[in-house]
Image 1: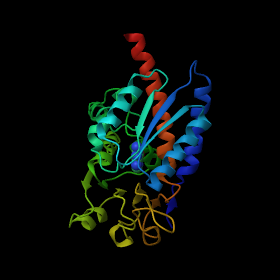
Image 2: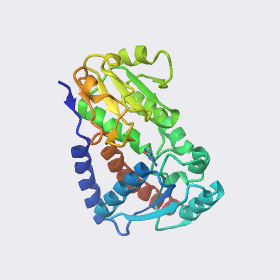
Image 3: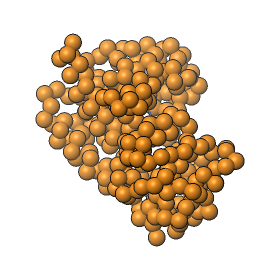
Image 4: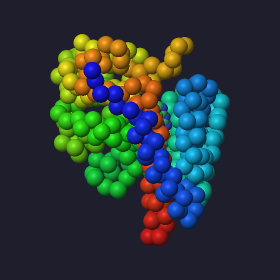
Length: 278
Ligand code: GUN
Protein backbone atom coordinates (compact mmCIF):
# COMPACT_ATOMS: atom_id res chain seq x y z
CA UNK A 1 0.00 0.00 0.00
CA UNK A 2 1.29 3.44 -0.94
CA UNK A 3 1.75 6.27 1.54
CA UNK A 4 -0.94 8.87 0.83
CA UNK A 5 0.66 12.32 0.65
CA UNK A 6 -1.84 14.51 2.48
CA UNK A 7 -1.56 17.95 0.90
CA UNK A 8 -4.39 19.33 2.99
CA UNK A 9 -2.59 18.65 6.29
CA UNK A 10 0.72 20.07 5.08
CA UNK A 11 -1.04 23.12 3.60
CA UNK A 12 -2.85 23.83 6.88
CA UNK A 13 0.48 24.02 8.72
CA UNK A 14 1.90 26.44 6.11
CA UNK A 15 -1.26 28.60 6.15
CA UNK A 16 -1.08 28.94 9.94
CA UNK A 17 2.52 30.19 9.70
CA UNK A 18 1.56 32.69 6.97
CA UNK A 19 -1.34 34.01 9.07
CA UNK A 20 0.94 34.83 12.01
CA UNK A 21 3.53 36.44 9.71
CA UNK A 22 0.83 38.63 8.10
CA UNK A 23 -0.37 39.75 11.55
CA UNK A 24 3.13 41.06 12.30
CA UNK A 25 3.33 43.21 9.12
CA UNK A 26 2.88 47.01 9.27
CA UNK A 27 0.50 47.01 6.24
CA UNK A 28 -1.76 44.42 4.62
CA UNK A 29 -0.52 42.44 1.60
CA UNK A 30 -3.01 42.31 -1.30
CA UNK A 31 -3.80 39.93 -4.18
CA UNK A 32 -5.60 40.94 -7.40
CA UNK A 33 -7.14 38.06 -9.36
CA UNK A 34 -8.29 38.12 -12.98
CA UNK A 35 -10.92 35.52 -13.80
CA UNK A 36 -12.18 35.27 -17.38
CA UNK A 37 -15.26 33.33 -18.47
CA UNK A 38 -17.52 30.97 -16.55
CA UNK A 39 -15.57 27.71 -16.30
CA UNK A 40 -16.93 26.15 -13.05
CA UNK A 41 -13.57 24.62 -12.08
CA UNK A 42 -11.78 28.00 -12.42
CA UNK A 43 -14.49 29.66 -10.31
CA UNK A 44 -14.08 26.94 -7.68
CA UNK A 45 -10.26 27.35 -7.54
CA UNK A 46 -10.50 31.15 -7.34
CA UNK A 47 -12.98 30.82 -4.49
CA UNK A 48 -10.54 28.56 -2.60
CA UNK A 49 -7.79 31.17 -3.12
CA UNK A 50 -10.14 33.91 -1.85
CA UNK A 51 -10.94 31.91 1.31
CA UNK A 52 -7.25 31.22 1.91
CA UNK A 53 -6.30 34.90 1.53
CA UNK A 54 -9.07 36.12 3.80
CA UNK A 55 -8.22 33.54 6.47
CA UNK A 56 -4.57 34.65 6.33
CA UNK A 57 -5.47 38.37 6.56
CA UNK A 58 -4.47 39.10 2.95
CA UNK A 59 -6.62 41.57 0.97
CA UNK A 60 -8.30 39.80 -1.99
CA UNK A 61 -9.74 41.57 -5.02
CA UNK A 62 -11.61 39.66 -7.74
CA UNK A 63 -11.78 41.10 -11.25
CA UNK A 64 -14.21 38.91 -13.23
CA UNK A 65 -14.65 39.31 -17.01
CA UNK A 66 -16.82 37.74 -19.72
CA UNK A 67 -15.11 35.16 -21.98
CA UNK A 68 -15.11 37.54 -24.96
CA UNK A 69 -13.20 40.40 -23.28
CA UNK A 70 -10.49 41.68 -25.67
CA UNK A 71 -6.94 40.67 -24.70
CA UNK A 72 -5.89 44.33 -24.67
CA UNK A 73 -8.47 45.09 -21.95
CA UNK A 74 -7.00 42.33 -19.77
CA UNK A 75 -3.52 43.76 -20.30
CA UNK A 76 -4.80 47.27 -19.39
CA UNK A 77 -6.24 45.88 -16.14
CA UNK A 78 -2.94 44.16 -15.36
CA UNK A 79 -1.11 47.46 -15.95
CA UNK A 80 -3.48 49.14 -13.50
CA UNK A 81 -2.84 46.40 -10.89
CA UNK A 82 0.91 46.65 -11.57
CA UNK A 83 0.77 50.32 -10.56
CA UNK A 84 -1.31 49.87 -7.40
CA UNK A 85 0.49 50.01 -4.05
CA UNK A 86 -2.18 47.97 -2.22
CA UNK A 87 -1.80 45.03 -4.64
CA UNK A 88 1.39 42.98 -4.17
CA UNK A 89 0.38 39.90 -6.14
CA UNK A 90 -1.45 39.44 -9.46
CA UNK A 91 -2.88 36.12 -10.59
CA UNK A 92 -4.55 35.34 -13.90
CA UNK A 93 -6.58 32.17 -13.46
CA UNK A 94 -5.82 29.67 -16.24
CA UNK A 95 -6.89 28.43 -18.69
CA UNK A 96 -8.00 31.60 -20.49
CA UNK A 97 -10.94 30.95 -22.86
CA UNK A 98 -9.38 32.22 -26.11
CA UNK A 99 -6.59 34.63 -25.20
CA UNK A 100 -2.85 34.09 -25.52
CA UNK A 101 -1.95 33.23 -21.91
CA UNK A 102 1.78 33.87 -22.51
CA UNK A 103 1.14 37.44 -23.69
CA UNK A 104 -1.23 38.16 -20.79
CA UNK A 105 1.16 36.71 -18.17
CA UNK A 106 4.08 38.65 -19.71
CA UNK A 107 2.21 41.91 -18.88
CA UNK A 108 2.44 41.20 -15.12
CA UNK A 109 5.25 42.98 -13.26
CA UNK A 110 7.55 40.00 -12.41
CA UNK A 111 7.75 41.29 -8.80
CA UNK A 112 3.96 40.78 -8.55
CA UNK A 113 3.84 37.45 -10.46
CA UNK A 114 2.76 35.27 -7.51
CA UNK A 115 2.00 32.26 -9.75
CA UNK A 116 5.65 32.37 -10.84
CA UNK A 117 4.73 31.90 -14.51
CA UNK A 118 6.39 35.06 -15.90
CA UNK A 119 9.36 34.20 -18.20
CA UNK A 120 11.62 36.55 -16.22
CA UNK A 121 10.91 34.62 -13.00
CA UNK A 122 11.63 31.35 -14.79
CA UNK A 123 14.92 32.73 -16.11
CA UNK A 124 15.90 34.03 -12.66
CA UNK A 125 15.03 30.66 -11.12
CA UNK A 126 17.24 28.98 -13.73
CA UNK A 127 20.12 31.32 -12.80
CA UNK A 128 19.51 30.80 -9.07
CA UNK A 129 18.75 34.52 -8.59
CA UNK A 130 16.10 35.98 -6.23
CA UNK A 131 12.70 35.39 -7.85
CA UNK A 132 9.17 34.17 -7.34
CA UNK A 133 9.07 30.50 -8.29
CA UNK A 134 5.96 28.71 -9.56
CA UNK A 135 3.53 28.13 -6.68
CA UNK A 136 2.52 24.74 -8.15
CA UNK A 137 6.13 23.63 -8.48
CA UNK A 138 6.95 24.78 -4.92
CA UNK A 139 3.94 22.82 -3.65
CA UNK A 140 5.09 19.70 -5.49
CA UNK A 141 8.60 20.07 -4.00
CA UNK A 142 7.16 20.22 -0.45
CA UNK A 143 5.24 17.00 -1.14
CA UNK A 144 8.36 15.31 -2.58
CA UNK A 145 10.37 16.43 0.47
CA UNK A 146 7.66 14.96 2.71
CA UNK A 147 7.89 11.65 0.79
CA UNK A 148 11.75 11.82 0.94
CA UNK A 149 11.61 11.00 -2.77
CA UNK A 150 14.83 10.53 -4.73
CA UNK A 151 16.07 8.98 -7.97
CA UNK A 152 15.02 9.99 -11.47
CA UNK A 153 11.88 11.92 -12.43
CA UNK A 154 9.48 11.97 -15.34
CA UNK A 155 7.28 15.05 -15.84
CA UNK A 156 4.24 14.57 -18.06
CA UNK A 157 3.21 18.14 -18.79
CA UNK A 158 3.29 21.23 -21.00
CA UNK A 159 6.36 23.49 -20.58
CA UNK A 160 4.49 26.04 -18.36
CA UNK A 161 4.39 23.58 -15.45
CA UNK A 162 7.34 21.36 -16.47
CA UNK A 163 10.06 24.03 -16.77
CA UNK A 164 10.09 25.25 -13.12
CA UNK A 165 9.66 21.68 -11.87
CA UNK A 166 12.71 20.57 -13.84
CA UNK A 167 14.83 23.37 -12.34
CA UNK A 168 13.70 22.78 -8.74
CA UNK A 169 14.25 19.02 -9.11
CA UNK A 170 17.77 19.65 -10.41
CA UNK A 171 18.49 21.72 -7.27
CA UNK A 172 17.74 18.52 -5.35
CA UNK A 173 20.06 16.54 -7.66
CA UNK A 174 17.08 14.87 -9.34
CA UNK A 175 17.38 14.57 -13.14
CA UNK A 176 14.12 14.66 -15.05
CA UNK A 177 12.73 13.91 -18.49
CA UNK A 178 9.77 15.91 -19.80
CA UNK A 179 7.24 14.19 -22.02
CA UNK A 180 3.79 14.97 -23.38
CA UNK A 181 0.73 12.76 -23.04
CA UNK A 182 0.55 11.98 -26.78
CA UNK A 183 4.18 10.76 -27.05
CA UNK A 184 4.34 7.11 -28.16
CA UNK A 185 7.12 6.50 -25.61
CA UNK A 186 5.04 7.80 -22.69
CA UNK A 187 4.62 4.45 -20.87
CA UNK A 188 8.32 3.52 -21.35
CA UNK A 189 9.44 6.80 -19.78
CA UNK A 190 6.95 6.75 -16.88
CA UNK A 191 7.74 3.08 -16.10
CA UNK A 192 11.47 3.75 -15.62
CA UNK A 193 11.06 6.77 -13.27
CA UNK A 194 11.27 6.83 -9.47
CA UNK A 195 9.25 10.06 -9.38
CA UNK A 196 6.30 10.65 -11.70
CA UNK A 197 4.69 14.10 -11.92
CA UNK A 198 1.65 14.53 -14.15
CA UNK A 199 -0.10 17.76 -15.19
CA UNK A 200 -2.04 17.18 -18.39
CA UNK A 201 -5.69 17.54 -17.37
CA UNK A 202 -6.55 14.15 -18.88
CA UNK A 203 -8.47 12.09 -16.28
CA UNK A 204 -7.03 8.58 -15.76
CA UNK A 205 -4.11 9.12 -18.20
CA UNK A 206 -1.68 7.19 -15.95
CA UNK A 207 -2.63 3.61 -15.08
CA UNK A 208 -0.94 1.06 -12.80
CA UNK A 209 1.06 -0.72 -15.53
CA UNK A 210 2.70 2.61 -16.47
CA UNK A 211 4.20 3.10 -12.99
CA UNK A 212 7.47 1.77 -11.53
CA UNK A 213 7.04 -0.29 -8.37
CA UNK A 214 7.56 1.96 -5.32
CA UNK A 215 7.54 5.22 -7.31
CA UNK A 216 6.37 8.54 -5.85
CA UNK A 217 3.42 9.73 -7.95
CA UNK A 218 2.35 13.39 -7.91
CA UNK A 219 -0.93 14.24 -9.64
CA UNK A 220 -1.31 17.93 -10.58
CA UNK A 221 -4.12 17.40 -13.09
CA UNK A 222 -7.63 18.16 -11.92
CA UNK A 223 -10.64 17.91 -14.18
CA UNK A 224 -14.18 18.53 -13.01
CA UNK A 225 -16.41 15.75 -14.35
CA UNK A 226 -20.16 15.38 -13.78
CA UNK A 227 -19.50 13.12 -10.76
CA UNK A 228 -16.38 14.56 -9.12
CA UNK A 229 -12.94 16.13 -9.37
CA UNK A 230 -10.65 13.70 -11.24
CA UNK A 231 -6.87 13.55 -11.39
CA UNK A 232 -4.67 12.48 -14.30
CA UNK A 233 -3.72 9.37 -12.33
CA UNK A 234 -6.06 6.39 -12.12
CA UNK A 235 -5.75 6.16 -8.32
CA UNK A 236 -7.29 2.69 -8.04
CA UNK A 237 -4.76 0.94 -10.29
CA UNK A 238 -1.73 3.10 -9.41
CA UNK A 239 -2.00 3.17 -5.60
CA UNK A 240 -1.14 -0.56 -5.16
CA UNK A 241 2.03 -0.10 -7.29
CA UNK A 242 3.27 3.27 -6.02
CA UNK A 243 5.36 3.89 -2.90
CA UNK A 244 3.66 7.25 -2.28
CA UNK A 245 0.86 9.05 -4.07
CA UNK A 246 -1.09 12.32 -3.90
CA UNK A 247 -4.89 12.07 -3.85
CA UNK A 248 -7.18 14.29 -5.96
CA UNK A 249 -8.66 16.25 -4.34
CA UNK A 250 -6.50 16.87 -1.26
CA UNK A 251 -2.99 16.55 -2.72
CA UNK A 252 -1.34 19.17 -4.93
CA UNK A 253 -4.37 21.54 -5.01
CA UNK A 254 -4.23 22.67 -1.36
CA UNK A 255 -0.42 22.91 -1.57
CA UNK A 256 -0.65 25.24 -4.59
CA UNK A 257 -2.97 27.53 -2.62
CA UNK A 258 -0.64 27.48 0.42
CA UNK A 259 2.41 28.25 -1.71
CA UNK A 260 0.50 31.06 -3.41
CA UNK A 261 0.18 32.68 0.04
CA UNK A 262 3.92 32.14 0.61
CA UNK A 263 4.58 33.84 -2.75
CA UNK A 264 2.31 36.81 -1.91
CA UNK A 265 4.40 37.42 1.23
CA UNK A 266 7.60 37.02 -0.78
CA UNK A 267 6.30 39.50 -3.39
CA UNK A 268 5.38 41.93 -0.59
CA UNK A 269 8.91 41.67 0.86
CA UNK A 270 10.60 42.03 -2.56
CA UNK A 271 8.51 45.12 -3.37
CA UNK A 272 9.22 46.79 -0.01
CA UNK A 273 12.92 46.03 -0.46
CA UNK A 274 13.03 47.40 -4.03
CA UNK A 275 11.27 50.58 -2.82
CA UNK A 276 13.97 51.00 -0.16
CA UNK A 277 16.69 50.47 -2.77
CA UNK A 278 15.11 52.93 -5.26
N1 GUN B 1 -5.07 26.70 -13.36
C1 GUN B 1 -4.65 25.49 -12.97
N2 GUN B 1 -3.60 25.61 -12.14
C2 GUN B 1 -3.36 26.92 -12.00
C3 GUN B 1 -2.40 27.68 -11.27
O1 GUN B 1 -1.55 27.17 -10.57
N3 GUN B 1 -2.47 29.03 -11.41
C4 GUN B 1 -3.40 29.63 -12.19
N4 GUN B 1 -3.38 30.95 -12.28
N5 GUN B 1 -4.31 28.97 -12.88
C5 GUN B 1 -4.28 27.62 -12.79
